[in-house]
Image (cartoon, rainbow, N blue to C red; front, side, top):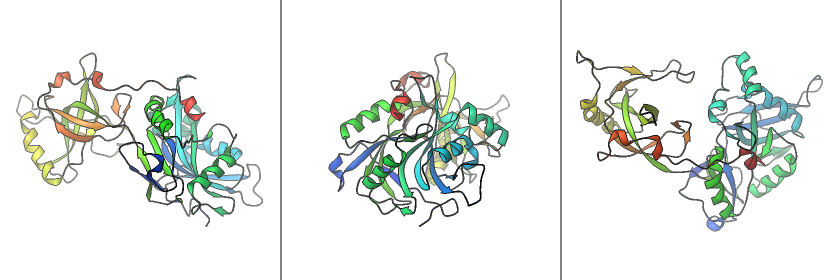
Amino acid sequence: MTYDAENPVVPMLAKAVAEVPGPDSVPGGLSYEPKWDGFRGIVYARRREAGADGGPALEIEIGSRGSKTLTRYFPELVAALAELLPGPCVLDGEIVVRSGEPGRERLDWEALGQRIHPAASRIATLSVETPAQFVAFDLISLGDRDLVDAPFAERRALLVETLEGRGAPLHVSRATDDVGLARRWLAEFEGAGLDGVVAKPLAAPYSPGKRTMLKIKHHRTADVVVLGYRVHRSGAGVGSLLLGLYDDDGELRTVGGVSAFSDARRLELVDELEPLVARGDDGDVLHAETERSRFSSGKDVSYVPLRPERVVEVRYDQMEGARFRHTVQFARWRPDRDARSCGFDQLEVPAAYDLGEVLG
């Protein structure tokens, strides 16, 4: 089968497990890789049409996990891949941006997010200021050969053989069959901004849309202050709780939100939180808005502020700067905690690790 942006591959997915599994937990064994925290990207490299001159031999398209095109946002990556790839192929991997001084580099999710911009002039500027890298971790086709049905062990060997020594910004993800080393990676690589570890069955074919792989991420808890709530999009009940932590200067800073409440629980929360609703001197409910970004353009960013007295324990995996990197999960209310005691100092800070060492 021929895959391209018009006939896209649906990426294979991973299901979450609590810990790094042993190699004998699945038939045929497992291969372990770092879990890259970037944009999933499917690279389609095909030969340019006959007669096309003045450019590289390959034409590059990049599709997202949801099969939307990312090509226009990463012109520097498109140009580099057209030169570096040896011929027609389809790669599965991750688009990342690295930042920091040599020897202290890490993945920069915020800079990566800024690369999705509507203005061509801004895209051109950012392609120079924060150039992207592509970390390949699977090979879906090579030349005329469809590798979807080939076992991962074979696809991985061909991936390494095909891309070996190509150089930045094209990288091949590290891999090992040593579960002890994989567990070390889970602990150490977070310091370079990575997201965990992925375990891949060596005997498995590429299974579009199926959760064949296993992902292991960091799981932590924190006690945070409830700052307010957003009304559910249905117009009834609490849609999400806004969360905050106190910094070293005693200022309460927004760190994210928690949602995923049942219909009944959303309505109950309105009554439970009513005594904490902030009101003006006239007794009217105060209203506030979170900061807008290009991602919130056109969205309702208003919320009902609450007196910062109630504390909730949440589960999270990692921080991005002073905010939770992903959506957090509600664990339990903490009526025993004083809101003023909920500071950033309770959060585990991973030891720094150089991204250059991870990329090799």
